[in-house]
Image (cartoon, rainbow, N blue to C red):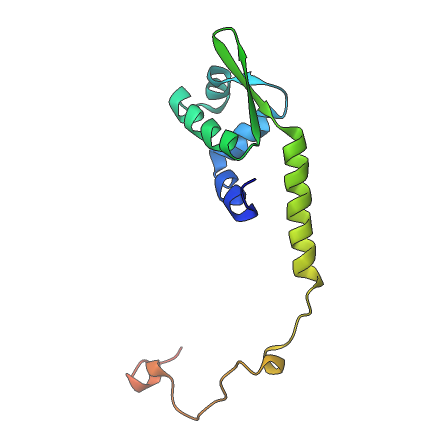
Length: 121
């Protein structure tokens, strides 16, 4: 299973999101998706290939045509994985900058812009 960062990178494309939304109503062939979105069949095929590689889309051959659908179980697992990640972020303590001692203390020097004669507004 691809990692969360790779999955998010693949699905963040607006056209791929629209394809996933179109498939939420049921399986569709490439030409139906292309007509619905107003893009070429070859573009839809390329997007579906990427979505299929991360297992969000299933493919079923029906005679000459291939119908694509959502892998609903995989989407549920992805949703859970993303929710777990968000919860881990929210559960971490939120130290202030002063508590981490990472900030540099002011040395009394002027900023680089001021040294070059740049006026602040």
